[in-house]
Length: 86
Image 1 (cartoon, rainbow, N blue to C red):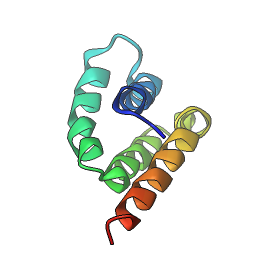
Image 2 (tube, rainbow, N blue to C red; image 1 turned 120 degrees about the vertical axis):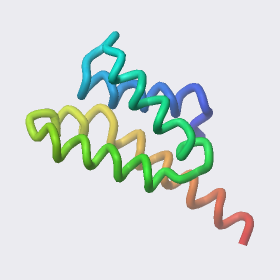
Image 3 (cartoon, rainbow, N blue to C red; image 1 turned 180 degrees about the vertical axis):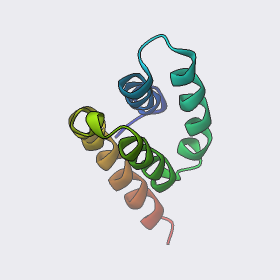
Protein backbone atom coordinates (compact mmCIF):
# COMPACT_ATOMS: atom_id res chain seq x y z
CA UNK A 1 0.00 0.00 0.00
CA UNK A 2 1.19 3.54 -0.71
CA UNK A 3 1.26 5.91 2.23
CA UNK A 4 1.00 9.69 2.03
CA UNK A 5 4.76 10.22 2.15
CA UNK A 6 5.42 7.90 -0.79
CA UNK A 7 2.43 9.15 -2.76
CA UNK A 8 3.64 12.75 -2.55
CA UNK A 9 7.15 11.56 -3.34
CA UNK A 10 5.76 10.20 -6.63
CA UNK A 11 4.18 13.58 -7.32
CA UNK A 12 7.53 15.26 -6.75
CA UNK A 13 9.10 12.79 -9.18
CA UNK A 14 6.62 13.87 -11.86
CA UNK A 15 7.12 17.55 -11.05
CA UNK A 16 10.90 17.21 -11.19
CA UNK A 17 10.80 15.26 -14.46
CA UNK A 18 8.85 18.06 -16.13
CA UNK A 19 9.97 21.23 -14.39
CA UNK A 20 13.35 20.30 -12.93
CA UNK A 21 14.51 19.58 -9.41
CA UNK A 22 14.57 22.62 -7.14
CA UNK A 23 12.37 24.67 -9.47
CA UNK A 24 9.48 26.52 -7.81
CA UNK A 25 7.06 25.50 -10.58
CA UNK A 26 7.59 21.84 -9.68
CA UNK A 27 6.68 22.55 -6.06
CA UNK A 28 3.62 24.60 -7.08
CA UNK A 29 2.42 21.75 -9.31
CA UNK A 30 2.88 19.20 -6.52
CA UNK A 31 1.01 21.38 -4.02
CA UNK A 32 -1.87 21.71 -6.49
CA UNK A 33 -2.01 17.91 -6.86
CA UNK A 34 -1.92 17.13 -3.13
CA UNK A 35 -5.59 17.97 -2.50
CA UNK A 36 -7.04 15.66 -5.16
CA UNK A 37 -4.57 12.95 -4.15
CA UNK A 38 -5.58 13.27 -0.49
CA UNK A 39 -9.24 13.08 -1.50
CA UNK A 40 -8.59 9.82 -3.38
CA UNK A 41 -9.09 11.41 -6.79
CA UNK A 42 -6.16 9.65 -8.41
CA UNK A 43 -7.95 9.88 -11.78
CA UNK A 44 -7.58 13.68 -11.57
CA UNK A 45 -3.88 13.41 -10.75
CA UNK A 46 -3.49 10.94 -13.62
CA UNK A 47 -5.28 13.38 -15.93
CA UNK A 48 -2.84 16.14 -14.99
CA UNK A 49 0.17 13.91 -15.50
CA UNK A 50 -1.22 12.93 -18.91
CA UNK A 51 -1.53 16.66 -19.65
CA UNK A 52 2.10 17.18 -18.67
CA UNK A 53 3.10 14.39 -21.04
CA UNK A 54 1.13 16.01 -23.87
CA UNK A 55 2.71 19.40 -23.17
CA UNK A 56 6.21 17.89 -23.00
CA UNK A 57 6.32 15.03 -25.54
CA UNK A 58 10.07 14.60 -25.16
CA UNK A 59 9.50 13.57 -21.53
CA UNK A 60 6.80 10.96 -22.17
CA UNK A 61 9.16 8.00 -21.85
CA UNK A 62 10.61 9.28 -18.60
CA UNK A 63 7.13 9.91 -17.17
CA UNK A 64 6.06 6.42 -18.24
CA UNK A 65 9.02 4.70 -16.62
CA UNK A 66 9.40 6.80 -13.46
CA UNK A 67 5.84 7.85 -12.61
CA UNK A 68 3.19 5.79 -14.43
CA UNK A 69 3.86 2.42 -12.74
CA UNK A 70 3.60 4.00 -9.30
CA UNK A 71 0.46 5.92 -10.21
CA UNK A 72 -1.15 2.78 -11.61
CA UNK A 73 -0.51 1.08 -8.29
CA UNK A 74 -2.06 4.02 -6.44
CA UNK A 75 -5.17 3.90 -8.66
CA UNK A 76 -5.60 0.17 -7.98
CA UNK A 77 -5.32 0.77 -4.25
CA UNK A 78 -7.90 3.58 -4.43
CA UNK A 79 -10.35 1.33 -6.33
CA UNK A 80 -9.86 -1.48 -3.81
CA UNK A 81 -10.40 0.87 -0.90
CA UNK A 82 -13.51 2.35 -2.53
CA UNK A 83 -14.98 -1.09 -3.21
CA UNK A 84 -14.60 -1.97 0.46
CA UNK A 85 -17.19 0.68 1.32
CA UNK A 86 -19.82 -0.47 -1.21
